[in-house]
Amino acid sequence: MEARYYRKPEKTGVIMSRRRSVFAHLFKLMYIIVELLLVNLSLVAAFFLVYDRDLPTFSLSFSDYLSTMPLMTIGAVLYIDYFGMTHFFRKNRTDMVVVSFRFVFLVIVSAAAIAFAFQWYTFPRWVMVVGSGIMFISTSIWTVACLEMSKRIYSKGRLVIVARNREDADRVFSKISGQLKSLHINYLGYVLEGDMEKVYRAVGRSTEVVISPSVNEADKAKLYLYCANIDKTIYVVPQFSDLIYSKFRVVQFHDMPTFMIDCLGLTFQQRLFKRIFDLAFSIVVLLLLWPLMLIIALAVRIDSKGPVLYSQERITESGRLYIVYKFRTMVAGAEESFGAFQSSPDDPRVTKVGRWLRDSHLDELPQFLNILFGDMSVVGPRSDRPTTIGEFEDHIPGYNQRLKVKAGLTGLAQVYGRYNSDPEDKLRFDMMYIKNYSFVSDVRIILKTIQAMMPFRDNYNVQANDIKNWEYDV
Image (cartoon, rainbow, N blue to C red; front, side):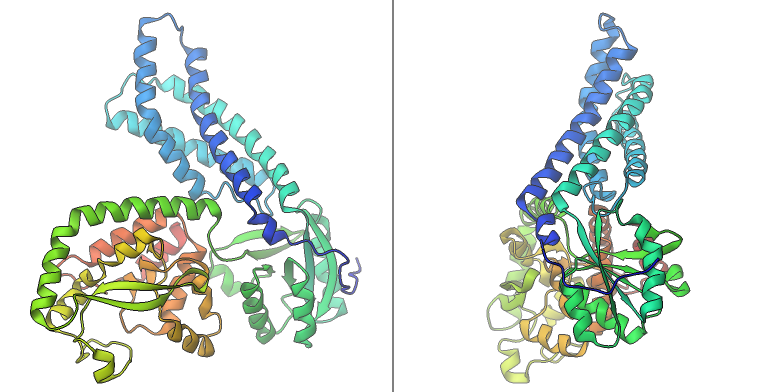
């Protein structure tokens, strides 16, 4: 099969804006609400199918179900987020049915565990069995229906192949042509490596890019970064080493598997759930720890002259500037007296109380106010100064990709790194977090942070398996 040479498309509707439109967000919220209704209505229907409503035990059994319902529904919301069930982009019906089965299995297991834990023993097991069948059928139908509806919302993709030569483009096109219709993609043509300006123009007018494995590694690296910066979806044919170390979603074109690298960042639903959690968590922490914060403030004031709080301009999601608050750990006017440079373990600017606050991470507590104000999140990339971002971006291409999400009080880089960790290492951790985000991963990082703050413990004695397990488990 012959691939045609790339030509500029006549119409260039923007799929990414549709994926992030208000209508798309409302559609996904509708999916979640209906899915939660189906979960509960499936069990209610099972009650009426399995038991006679006139039996004296019916009301008692149904009462135990009603007691289980709130926690089970919360669990269902978390599973929807965990499985990415609102992410319909470039998925097929089989994907939807498989994830529906996993979702229903965990919901039923959770319902049984909740009933057992609270001793609601009259929640009948036969209701769970029959309800799980009804739930699987209804969830599968609803999810597949939403998949088809999503194709109308997202419109068709526009795909371009980046190849080494004409023969290479023909070979790649023969692999992908059979799946373009089912994946809702229009083919624009191919462009050859070498003239990167021409490649960039072609990629800029497309929405998705297939990069041939024959393209040289230097051009691939440039394309990856370019596509990440302008939110293009990339299909990468993996090398053997990639199969060993990478976590990825595979999209198969005929007998050629590719890695699908979608745009970084969180969906609207993920941002909404994350914001709700941030608000609840920060309010609880501030209410519980205000006496400790008052003691720390007095200790800082007694230990050295100067203000209790240290404020500094930082940068967060989408390059937005904000003022971060921390307990002061250095002598007043440290930058004016010693100069501005990255802190180290023997930094002469750090006070006695400040050293203890840094070791215990308690100097970070005022940042819960930043979380409450919406400038930060509990978990996310470490916040940097605007000048630092610029300096690092000059030497580490892609460093500004950390700004796809809000800066965090804690995160992978904060838990597994140090104050003076190399920027490249911080970026690796931050990219791992953004790419693998889920509510469960946030909880695990928070627990790791609490563990690292425990006294008489080496905060940085983390085994490599801890990081590997986080990356693959979530």
